[in-house]
Amino acid sequence: MRAVILAAGEGMRLRPLTTYMPKVMLPVGNKPILEFIIKALMENDIRDITLVVGYHQDKIKQYFGSGSEFGARIDYAVQKKQLGTAHALYHARIDDEFLLFYGDNLVTSECVKELLKSEVNTILGSYSDRPWKYGVIEKKSNKLVKIKEKLRESEEAIVFTGMGHFDGKIFELIEERMREGIYDLPDILNEMEIKIKVISGWRDAIYPWDLLELNSYALKDTTRKLAGKIEDSTIIGDVEIGENTKIGAGSYIRGKVKIGKNCEIGPNSVILGDTSIGDGVRIGAMSYIENSIIMSNTNIGINALIKDSVIGRDVDIAPKFVALSGKIKRIVDDEVIEVTGGAVIGDGASLGPVVIVYPGVLIGSNSNIGALKLIDKDVANGERVI
Image (cartoon, rainbow, N blue to C red; front, side):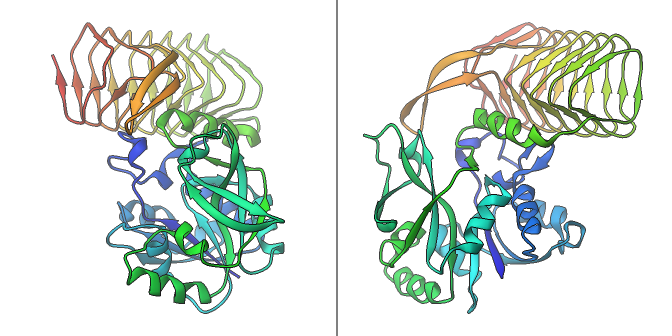
């Protein structure tokens, strides 16, 4: 059995984190989202994988290569223009049976197992409390009636997860409909006889703060493993510390925490779960970090306070930074959404000393914020706040 994983999209609603990185490569638990799908496939002995790539495809190819390091055999199909999910799938056309996945979702080994047990032309659905962001499944006796887009009147509904079991015949229908300008997979499925299975164990990040939920889930399997050099500190729970990482004296680390390789955590720092810190990160003394994602090669000065935040790669943060966390309402995609969380900072941003960022504020990639600033509005990519 072959798996086809759609990994060509950008993930616009996750900007600025996807400015230089496709959504499938955003790290949770210090691994790209896509890697969790591949791991789930390996656990079910599915080793032949086609990745449909497009946006920043080089990042995916550099990381996964031929798949040999992951026990897989990976080949690539390129969707040069992202027109839709059916259009993406068509680039991987094969004659045999295959399993389909959206590469930007977190799935479990059990999800793959359910697909393997299913008949051809079966899709997996899952309950969601934000059904208007997905294709909502209307079914009768476990058969698809219709996938409806953006159904807002329901608080919870069964949505299409992007997972399915098909054979080569689906490509004939996709080819016909693309001639008519139809490029999305739900439109194709609505013309087929499709069976439905409802599962759990599927998660998706719509907005940047949703990555924190995925991160918590990814950290569930973290086991205690302490490498590197740890000075006299208190470490409680399932904490993983990578090779060549230094933990300064007097630090307190507790809960599901994963710290990568070649990091330096300054003395008297507090790091609480659920937090993942990538490789090559420097955190200054007396800093407090809780329930956050800090990506690789980021520098954070002394006395930082960071909670419920997502910080990208190669970010430079001067001393006494504060990322406030709370519940706010934002307008995203012309909709009012409620956000609970802290700051989101894009790759390569630079923040001067004593900067305070309000809850739910987005700071763009390569932006530059001067000293002694209170940031209560979004900062665009490359913008300077002096």
